[in-house]
Length: 96
Picture 1: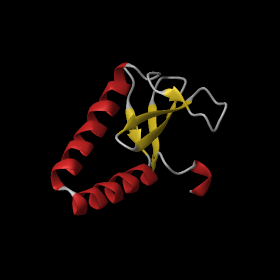
Picture 2: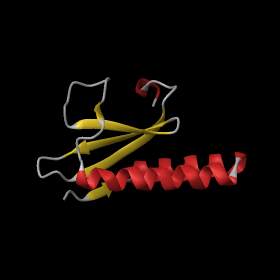
Picture 3: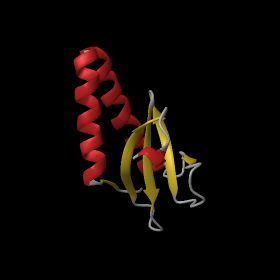
Picture 4: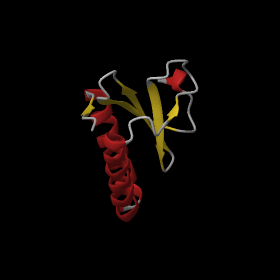
């Protein structure tokens, strides 16, 4: 089973997005954060379940979608998962 680490940037993204969603809808923000943690927990068992990131040709960089957000992660050779960032799906990564 793979372990999961969150980068500092990804934790900041998570907090920022959660606070933004909370200001719009508390119930949706709770559902979204629960979905994020449920999907990232699945990565422990299935580290390659996400699709390869289209912007890169590296097979170790992948993404899963939660609502309108892309959770971008790296699968290390020992199957350790690093959550690298969370980005809105409507914006290209080049904008960040």
